[in-house]
Length: 639
Image (tube, rainbow, N blue to C red; front, side, top):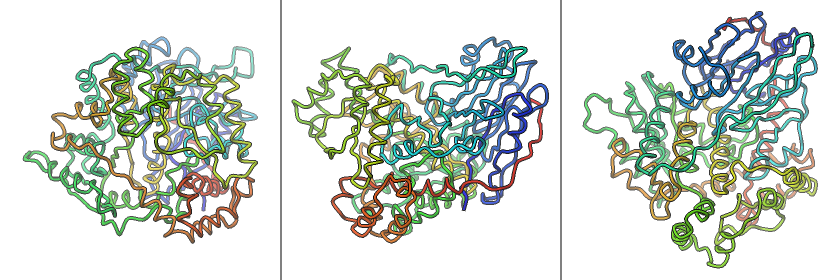
């Protein structure tokens, strides 16, 4: 069964060959989404040939042309023509347009034509990305979906990139390695410029990247930053659900989902459904806090409808690794480690859709943004060593880090390329009592990886390091913080695609660029603390979320559901490794994996997660059989 394409767009050159490419675009099987939603929006070059061709199954395409200049925004809601005119009219260059775009929530793909040049960008958070490839006849074409470009150019799979995806964490810049040869990802925070052909020439110059986003300096106080963050979260929520009558929120009971529940309630929908999956663990606190939040959301405000709280019993929630065959319903841009939890996510979104919800909000991204990673204390140590050591001492005692290794890690000054070259190893990595103060997390190669896979992975890391890979930011903590947000944004694509299969748009407002910027703008020693839980988010939500709910300082985990899932779904895992596609590519030892499927509580599986390998296997099976045979015939809509 072919994978269902997420909504996509392509940007085409102004040529006969570009027009021909538009007729070769794959058509998503919209009959497999609830209601069969879908349609084609085509924005034309001035001559009438297709420029931007989009299949917006969920998102909205807004476009405007003024003379030779044009602007296309693809995001959660339609942008009024008057707003587009205010963005485009009188602007002279990219920088001027970017300054105006900063007034909008940072959730859009932007495609613009200014001064004879087309340029495209996604979001700084990495939620929206840009890819490009060279077509034999048409030249450079761009899209938000690498699989579309692979289809159009006949690009083969890249075993090196596939091997990398069997790791749990793929750090910058290796996260940009696309799964198909000849298809390239433009880095988050960078745009792609597509110059036009010079007069009298047939071919346009090649594409080039430019940087359009820089993280703000961390100079705001906690109070000022909280006000800015609160405004950004509210604006992002409104951009997704403003004006909708029926919406839903995942209310896990954690601070992030609770925040979005009350932010959604403030938009005044006629019906608000809150969904909680009960935990099997009797020591779990999430359900208790979710019930408290739902009760508080009832409130005494007679103008606000009472939310309906739906609790899904624990025995109805699938374990991890359930219904692995269903992952073929979506063709993600890449294998995602969250794929083994698809059945659980599908259940929750299906229940939300059954309430009549027209948009579903989740708290994804909150941990990456607001918890704060220990690496940040490296940054603080440079300017304020006493404060850094005071905070780090509190964290060290909580995590059990020994004194001397902590000091050694704090004083380490290894460059980013040097760290990257040694970021993978065949040696087991201790999970606890290891100070995390470097450029990222060092990972172990799995014992079921083949020598070929290990060689490919090791060479990828070494090649990136030898190429003098640049960090996202010169400060370690800021580099790790931004990389973690971008990694989480990639993983969230799985939720979006499941929602599209069901017919329910799913959003994570915390991945809005304005939310990311507001967070990074706060002084580090105030933004994170070993003695307070998510202090910036707590202060930002005062007056929106009741203080009693902001007082929670704990977080539940679902590791027991994952381990139990290995036992419950051992037969499905054994079927997966029988005729393994990864084994056919020479990347895994299928016999080793079959033995582990029969021994779900093996110490090997306690020490090494198998989820990324499972995700790679299921993704590969979908990618190899991804395309319907029907073709798209574009209809032209003038910008």
